[in-house]
Length: 532
Ligand code: G4P
Image (cartoon, rainbow, N blue to C red; front, side):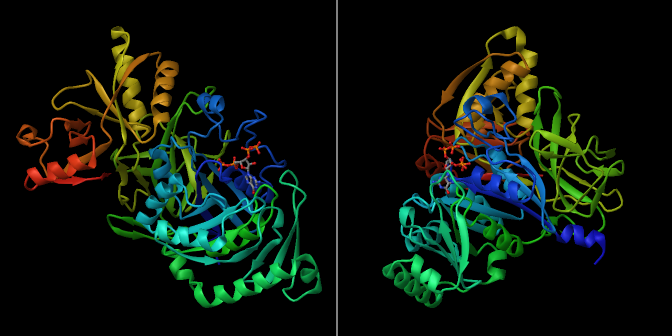
């Protein structure tokens, strides 16, 4: 195989998703340790002892000990080159999280064994399902008392509408946790752990070995035998094709904190998860192994590092090889450019890259020319990737600057932050930036907005929360001629426009949405818009 094909074939690009506290950071840290990317546990995050996550970019994150922005981590493990897209698990996550999933080829869903599927996982999962992204499940914290494993699988299947295949099966939980039975390798990995603060010992034992019989109580041994029989008879069969289409999730049980079952999971996951997948563009499917370079921007971030004060556009390479200094075609800008200071990131450490391959994420210096969803490609083979959907925000506020003399900075700040995709901005029909209506997915984004306007643009704002919770794009109307006043709406429904001129409706309840649809013949509303 040529080096080029091998490089791409060995890439694995995935996102880790979880509800806060399920153990995503702990697992990520273990991955990095195996790959030699970090030397010491606790380097990624120590919430309580004030060490900060390597992905803590912004001051606000440090203050609150949370991860606001999604970071990208690259490291090698064996012959694989791994790109992990870290998604903030905090409840107040943003659209960024959704978009990050667009750049991944699969997702690892971390679930707390005592809690099962939680709100955040459900939300993120919806996005994966929309795109048919393969999902792998790691049920964590088996060293603590957990819920019944059958019940957990049933919950995943019912709540997320996906089949499950237990790759391994737990033997007890909490104080009685004795390990897992690996159904593929047909052996038990025995767990010997003193407490969650220390690494557990993992010993590989055959099912009928005297060592295993000595380790388990008679009842545990019998339960395991019964479980194996039951799973073999009743569960879904393993079907890699179904996994790749996001229809079947391989499930692994383990305990990240004691480092039990994480490396076996990584090894199997890397075999099962697909290499860079083909992407849809206007000229058809773009194969990652095509020699011609192409990529799309999925995230823009300003002022990541105070020392740099810059703006970085993150791109997912979809095909071919990126070479530093080579001209590329920026489709939306309609011109040839060179990608300046291309870099790969290991959280705060940046290194300039000379080449990168399909599947990789690179950050490039953005002088203000890129928008989310933009395509860059080889000038000799132009294409446009399908747009990244804009999701409907759920929280709205009217925002204006405190000091009227700071109007210019206010407009610039709000526009730039909106361009990065951190917030969405709207205005009343036919009015300009007099007052801006800001829509966000999570409350924290308002705080980030306030903080950034103050720190980066020196503008203080007044924010007045609005009662709306639902937003819909009005489809199939010509923005130039549309007579929004002719709509029949409840008094608590509001018409706004986005900055592309599109009309939208803000609603306080789903009931009002139905009402609007019932009373306006021909009205079509969309929950998210494709901005190409
Ligand atoms: P997150 O990124 O998904 O938010 O979760 P994170 O890894 O930060 O883990 C949340 C808490 O759960 C941490 O404890 C972590 O140590 C603990 N944890 C993670 N995996 C396991 C596990 O397998 N078993 C047990 N018993 N605990 C686990 P914390 O007290 O919030 O923080 P820290 O003081 O440990 O850093």
